[in-house]
Length: 112
Length: 113
Image (cartoon, rainbow over all chains, first blue to last red; front, side, top):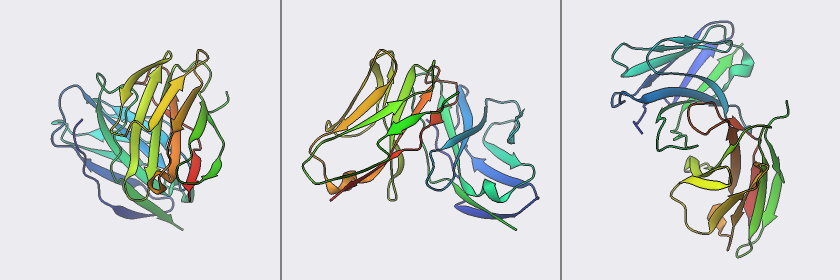
């Protein structure tokens, strides 16, 4: 699976949009981009995933660049409960049964 | 719909002992994956089971093993415990273990003394 690079930490003001970048310059054509987050002492939580089109759900939006070498997760209106470690994962859908390769992620702190 | 449940939530063992952890996936999910989380190594994939068969395995020694039952419930076993096995053990379930999202349980906190 391709490697991802994320900033180790970032702060965000409550109510503002949080834009979390992820670099995956070695991504190949059949690799999807997944985002999970882990709130302290809980299991990771799925947020969103995509292949090449932008995606949006009730939690967030995922913007993938045209060359697919990077992506941005957008939390439109951050709340204190969004404080968590956010993981960007790229993954093929063959030969990786059940396996998510977590990196160090980005520690996001939402402040009042 | 009930989420993924793991038992026990906390466990204390001594070196050399063995331990069995249990995971009940979301109803209808056939894939169960196991992960180990430590402060030093982060989240690492242990193995994945689908329809009672191990389909994938991470880079862990043979002391770590697992199985899945016909009702999709899964257990993982660690034999001859070492201090370094102290970790949060997480299981995750999904429909097929591929494209679909994985739902994680709360984890079992294992402390080895």
